[in-house]
Length: 239
Ligand code: UDP
Image 1 (cartoon, protein in one colour):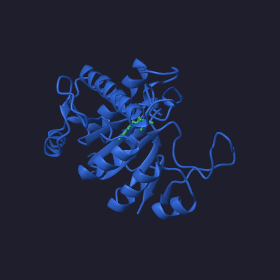
Image 2: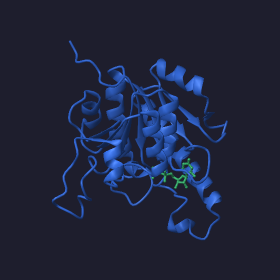
Image 3: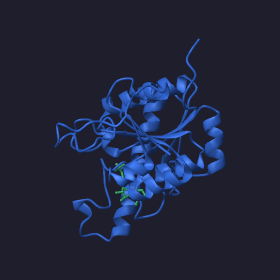
Image 4: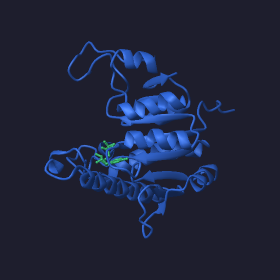
């Protein structure tokens, strides 16, 4: 008999950087295939998966390239970058035989469906991976906030924030070798200790909607599966 799943419906937040691998920018095919392979593992276990993907590997509204631009215009470019990543993810899923759909917060009907909540929920119930592109569809926000929003709207059990660091630490582990990882921490403790889990808007929305967050490193083989099994992987930020 297999162990019961700790989470049945999850919202996975993938940053754009997670798709770059060791490359300086863009999408690294081996890296994206490894990530998609991990998602396939949990989808095959019956977990319903929604994904919000970032765009920082291609363009960021607050980047130095965008410094002299009108911020809202730069942000729309950033949102379009997330659509490119979403299409790459869909393609990678399909190459593994996993059914996936892209829903974009910005209308781009030739290449993706426009976001529609009931349809997205229906896809999740059918076992299709739903990739949410275009962030929130509004400038001045981030894809972390889009992840909190879609996670709450989809009634997900948890938000899984995949990062380069394998959890939330007492200090930046790259700068302080004595830094230790929290196994669990409450929203209030994280706030009081001024720990950066997600940007403030995303964090506040998760806290308000009581959507717990697991921060974990997607680079470790099998990490996603261990999170789903409720093993001590990453950091659980809870109410
Ligand atoms: N963005 C936006 N509104 C949103 C989500 C994203 O304007 O709701 C823009 C913003 O310019 C951001 C870029 O898209 O810098 C890429 O998103 P993000 O920086 O969150 O990507 P990540 O860091 O996860 O790769």
